[in-house]
Amino acid sequence: MLDTKAIKDLLAAQLAANDSYQLSENDHLEFLSELETIGRLLTAVKTDANTQADERVLHSTYRCKDLSMLLCNKLKIHPGEAKRRTRLVRELPGLPHTREAMYAGEISGEHALVISDAIKRLPAEHVEGAERVLADVAPTLDPEFLKRAGKYVRTVVDPDGVYRDEREAVERRAARMSRGKDGSVRLSATMGPLEGEKVSTFLLGMAKPRSVDGEKDPRTFEQRLADAFIEAMTIAMAHHDIPGLPRSLLVMTMNADNLKDKTGCARTDTGQPVSPDLAQHVACDADIAEVVLGEKGEPLAYGRGRRLASLAQRRALAVRDKGCAFPGCDRPPSWTEAHHVVHWIDGGPTDLDNLVLLCVYHHHVIHAQEWVIIFEHGIPAFIPPKWIDPDQVPLRNIRVDCPLVL
Figure (spheres, rainbow, N blue to C red):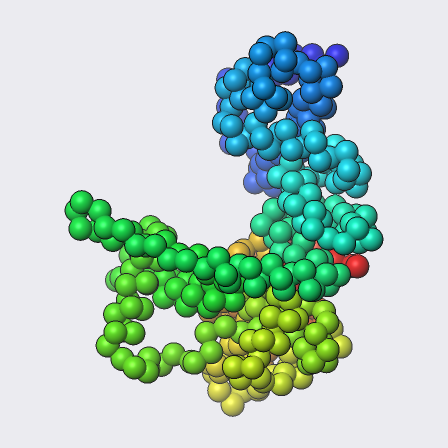
C-alpha cells in the first residue's frame, strides 16, 4: 500500500526548505521536469484508486449518485475536474497505448482525454492504429497541438467525416451583442473553421505588442485584441478598399494533386489541419500560387537583390515555419520578424535558407545569446549554447516536425 503519509511529509519538507533556487539552471529545469513526471504518475495512481472505488460502488455507500459526485462532494474538487477524472476511469481501459504512456508518466490525463476525443468519431477499422500513433506522438506535444494531430489523423482516414463536421461548424456560426449599464458593448462570436482563421490571423496581426519610446506595451492581451477589433472596424467603415493589406488574409497549403483528388490534408498558415473538400471549396474563390518545393517539402529562394524579405517570401516562411520557429514558441506568423541567419551586413543573402521567422522576444534571444541556427533539409533547427545543453543537440519547433506516421 502506498505510504501517503511519507509522501506528504517529504513534500512538506521540500516546501519548508524552499531551496530550488540553489540549483543550476539546467538542474532547475530537470527538477521541474521530474516534478511534472511525478504529478503525471500521481494522476495514474488516482485513476487506479478511482477505478477501484467505482468497482466497489463506493458512491452508493456515501449516498452519492455516481463516482463523479463522490469525488466532487468528498474531495471538494470542481465538478468539471471530477467529471474529467471519471472519464479517465471509463475511457482509459479502451486506450491501451495511451494508458501505458500515462502510467509511465510520459503524458498527462489531459493528453489521454484529448486522444480519447480524437478517436471517438473515427471509422472502427482505424481506431486501433490512430490510438497507437497519437499515444506515440503525445509525449512530444502539448495537449493543444495534440488536438491538431488528432484532427490531422482523422482528416487523412475520414475526410468526409471531417468535412461534415466543418460544415456543421459553419451552420453553428453566431454573433451576439449586448450593452452594459455603463454603455460598454460586449460582443461574442462563433465562426466556421476557415472564417475563424481569417479573423484570428488578421486580429492577431493587429494586436501585436507595440513599444512606445522603448517602453513595453502596458496593455493586456485582451485589451490589445479589443483595440485591434476596434481599429479594424474603424478602417473598414472609412474605406471600401483597405490600403496596404493583401486581399488574401488566409494562407492554406496543399499538394496540388491532393487538392485535385480531394485526398490528404491541407494546412492553414498556423498549422491547423483542413479537410481536402473544404480546401477545394475555398480554392474556388482564392488565388492559387505554385510554390516549388524540395525533396523534404522545403520552399526555395531570392539572393542578395534585396535586404528585406518580400511578401512572397514572408508567405513561404509562414508556410515553412508556421510562426516563430524557436523551439517551444507558439507565436503566429503575424507576430514574427524575418531574421537573417547570416546577417545581411556580413554578406548573408535574403534567401529562404538564410531566413527564419522569430517573434520579437526570441529575435532578441538569438541576437543576445549563443544560439546557432542551422538548416536541416531546408528546415531551421536551433543549437543551444553549451550552458543550456552541453551536448548541443539541435532542436526544432514541434509545429514543423510533428512525427506522425500513419
